Length: 174
Image 1 (cartoon, rainbow, N blue to C red):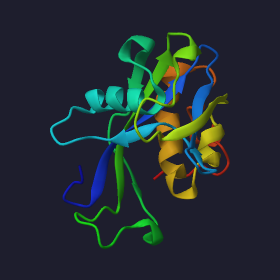
Image 2 (image 1 turned 90 degrees about the vertical axis):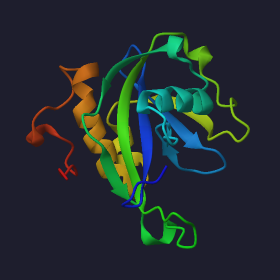
Image 3 (image 1 turned 180 degrees about the horizontal axis):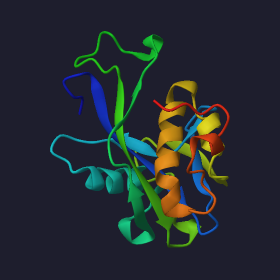
């Protein structure tokens, strides 16, 4: 669903294990990595969309995870001009996302990347909490930093920086 300003409504998921590491997934057939995320359908509740996308992208059901936090507000990013499909209507200029942080409460063997006809990912691994903020494609970095900063205290309150001076050197508030 695309809103009146041209932003696609979306949910992002930060899945963590019991060691505080996060799931990082490689886009199928590409070299780029990202957190699972997906669009919200018309009249779909964001939490329902999150669970649907969680299953479609990494094979997990609600019984495999526990929600431990969600961003208070939408986080936005614009697409670079070259990625905007100018001949597609409605025009999508970027995404507005609600981010969830989830704890895996089942064994990681439940993670499966083949639960949809066209799998989104072809590989995954656990990475340090802050790694994705600098490893994701450049136009998503600010949203990743903001989501990780806001949601981190739910996961590792003693390890996640709470003051701007403690944030990664390239972090800038929007």
